[in-house]
Image 1 (cartoon, rainbow, N blue to C red):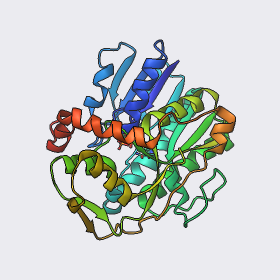
Image 2 (image 1 turned 60 degrees about the horizontal axis):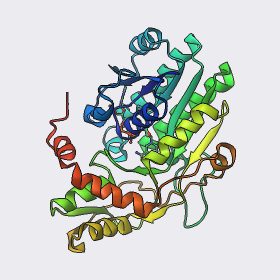
Image 3 (image 1 turned 135 degrees about the vertical axis):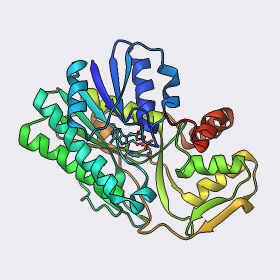
Image 4 (image 1 turned 30 degrees about the vertical axis):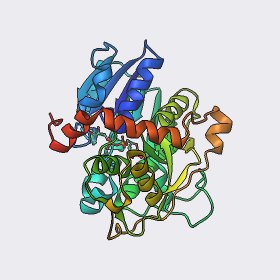
Amino acid sequence: MRMLVTGGAGFIGSQFVRYMLEKYPDYVIVNFDALTYAGNLDNLEQVASNPNHIFVRGDITDAEAVGRAIDAYQIEAIVNFAAESHVDRSIADPGLFVRTNVLGTQTLLEAARRRGTRKYVQISTDEVYGTLGETGYFTEATPLAPNSPYSASKAGGDLLVRSYYETYGMDASITRCSNNYGPYHFPEKLIPLMITNALGDLPLPVYGDGLQVRDWLHVRDHAAAIDLVLHQGKPGEVYNIGGHNERRNLDIVKLILGLLGKPESLIRHVPDRLGHDRRYAIDPAKITAELGWQPAYTFDIGIAETVQWYIDNERWWRRVQSGAYRV
Ligand code: NAD
């Protein structure tokens, strides 16, 4: 298969690229990424010399550049990871999120439609469903009720994907995953920020009371689920992905401090994020029953491995912190 993977220099996209090239040595992956602050070629070191990995720097809102890449490499499938992905940044600059996550998605869909590209997979998020109370789970039938400019822009992208299926019959699927963690995670996000700050004996900023609940999944389990949706997902369907792994933010921070042998006195409660969703939790019954997906990682093993990865790969995160990774 010849695939266009957009956003493949980011956290999850680069994991997916590494996973796919290892599992399918004859696949060709054209990695199309604008290299925003979140794109990092260091994430692709393991595949840098693989002739089946082709990196193209380009913006998904640029219809000509997208079309050129699809034509030049005779692309059969598109998996779209490219996005602005950080909620705090979306509160500061919502317009950029609409541009990339809504207009960018539509640009990709249109390019695929005009060329009859065989398959399209949109990587979305459980945040499009809004927030939960203390009980219940998001299913694929949960109404969209996004609360942040980030999640609203992702929901907008999802609705365009749906419309291309309904209107043009495009073979397009959507995945909605819970929070990911694992190696190469940009240290502005909760888990890598806490690990890297703790390693440097710096304060650990925790929003509000820290009792917000997130459902965590190892990024490699996410990549495996997307592989299944790409090959076996039904056109027009949404697949929720999650590992039944609910944790309160404050408990995660304490767990990380424990693994690193650092004191809880490093924790600093800071004013809560505006519109902060209280709880996310995914019901993954559909992808489990229909595609046979199961997470391989338990959280305890995954988080311990991840902490160890940051200890072993200080050069990676120091280059991110200093800005030296930017090209
Ligand atoms: P990330 O911010 O680490 O990576 C995003 C990548 O997209 C970067 O490489 C960036 O350079 C690229 N990009 C941004 N704008 C672009 C543009 N206009 N054109 C081309 N490339 C562009 O994000 P991530 O955490 O890897 O998330 C990937 C996808 O998965 C996103 O769509 C996100 O909404 C979704 N998702 C993330 C999580 C999570 O926990 N991180 C959970 C569920 C879903």
